[in-house]
Length: 229
Image (cartoon, rainbow, N blue to C red; front, top):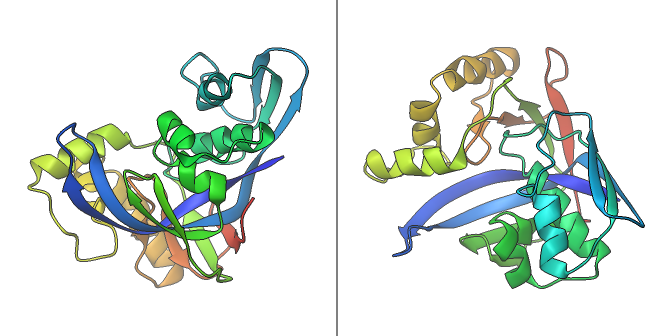
């Protein structure tokens, strides 16, 4: 089973709930960049292709617990961790699909990006991620550049609060906050800009930068949109 990466094409932070969760209005798409997951009888999680914690906080384990199932899960990671591409959320969504669970409330209880990853394709995503409105699929090609470091979503939202809840001039309100949390992002943004002649956008809270179009080479990954799981 494939677990497709999620790309946040645009993101506005619209409000802050009393419980501290931020409300968003975003466009997300699924990409052909994907992890591969297999399920068999047993109870365990083995991860290949990346150094990812397979402990109790892993979203695959949390998804299995949420649906009351056990399995021996083999996970081959191709989506970089901590890159803002929803790798862990997509893996959890694959567990829900395997278990035949399409309940977005259950998905949201695992993680904010899991509901979109359950539905996939192209969608407008609101609330804290639990409101997923399907949009007409469009074939698009993106070039991604992911630094060798991730960004903490929690820290980026905290910085966004500290900066006075700015609305960014570009399509992603979190971009200024991410740059404040991790200044090294600017170097990688400029690398992609120099290679493509375009203005890169940050994927969600980071750390991946992307532009539309195909510009292979130099550690860049060319990915195309897919209709869904």
